[in-house]
Image (cartoon, rainbow, N blue to C red; front, side):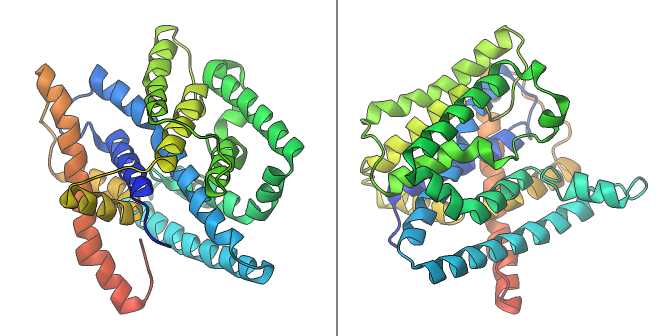
Length: 330
């Protein structure tokens, strides 16, 4: 399957968003700009889910039933290797041996919140195993719209009435697959060219996200980090619009950078928390941003620095492990 510059553009923007959310305060104190820029970048994980479903559907639809089972098995095993290899690394870095127990090891370090981004694997495990069923639900119109209606109601509650949600449900966080079904259905629709055609101007709907977060803050409303109506609408329209429209990038260097970033989002996603941890431990302890311009520039410098180190880790360490063991860790 040939690479899509539109998909790579979304992946590049999304991985920059992930790193910005995790590490933009590395070189300075937080600011209002950083807060709302981080809110704007909340499209990142939904877009990754849409793209996952988009490419998975294209491959899945082209296979027969036997091949589909093997395809799911192969993808699941690869994800499982990545999950346990990197979770073990973060476990060794972050564990408090004095309070460790079996239950804490599982619930704290291996259930989705052991390190930034681990929950994404929990979501993918669910979606991958359930994909044949979810695909049938999508094809069945009544089931599809019933699920979407349920999800919309859930997004309203998790976004605007979070305080009345039972604590047990809150503890599940953003991990239940049901929250991500609108993005899966969006990816399937885009893969099958059944998504409503959108003009490029609809990209601007992504700015609903920081606007929504601003309103929620003004009314002092607690809310989920990702399960809000603004993120749902903004992310789907943003990602769907870019994927549907041919994006022309005339600069060969710019295309090369976008393609390279798009091809290496996984290692950046996996490695950025450990890079941030090490930099916070050994380097920038006393750097603060005092001027308005520095509060804008430093978060992006932090983000770029982290991404570059992640790519260096991939080039010098991960590729070496791959060659020596045959185990792909990115």
